[in-house]
Image 1 (cartoon, rainbow, N blue to C red):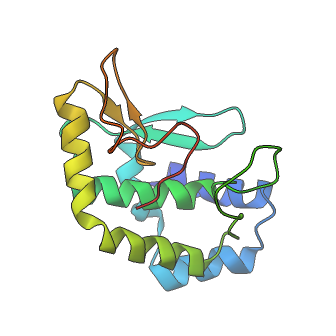
Image 2: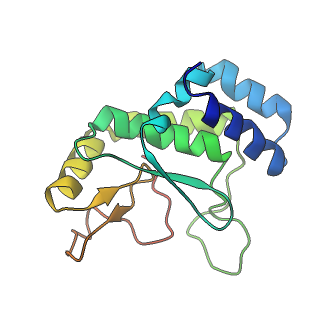
Length: 158
């Protein structure tokens, strides 16, 4: 079955982070998440941070729809972002619980900002950079437009 590696990782991450199984079931049910939903991530290079969260580099030429889907599936596989979690660093908004409602909020925000995915991915590709689905641009010694690139450490989900 396609995508089973990341569907398994999703369940492992949710358990490790203490996400109740009822929340995982609700996300899967409400948003039609199945093992094959993770297939988009199988085609990307994975980078894991020190806390065990996965990020995926978009291959050059990735379209906006695939970038948007990879963004959502990255959030789901990581079972949250930890953004806003008490860590000693100030955040611009409080931590949001991982839930089906938060997945719905991200989907709605992505729909409202659908135009930005194609534009941003094309911009980074044209300038020799790589993009991850969290919309962090990774340049190769080139200046990337600060209007398009989020500061390091910020999670821009749509």
